[in-house]
Length: 88
Image (cartoon, rainbow, N blue to C red; front, side):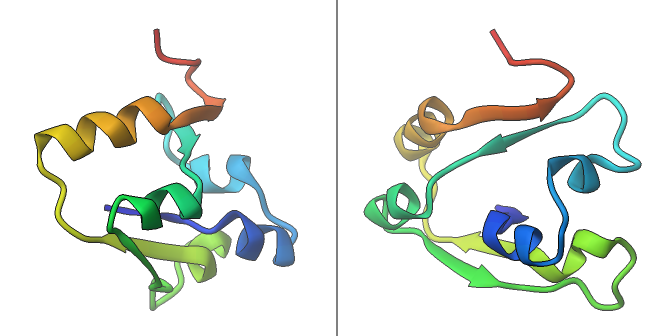
């Protein structure tokens, strides 16, 4: 799984709208790093190179096993941030 670190986005004066740029019909959701760690996941900085979007410097990989029950827990903890609209 991959994502963007909100602290690194903020350091670059970027936010969710920058992550969504060019991705019409999508939305941004968030998971707390502490929760991911409690689920035996690791969060690794993985900047996209070559950088195509300004937010690529804040790209991360979330590594670790994601069986069906863990995916359900991750899904339930995710909160909507911006975009298409909160899922129902």
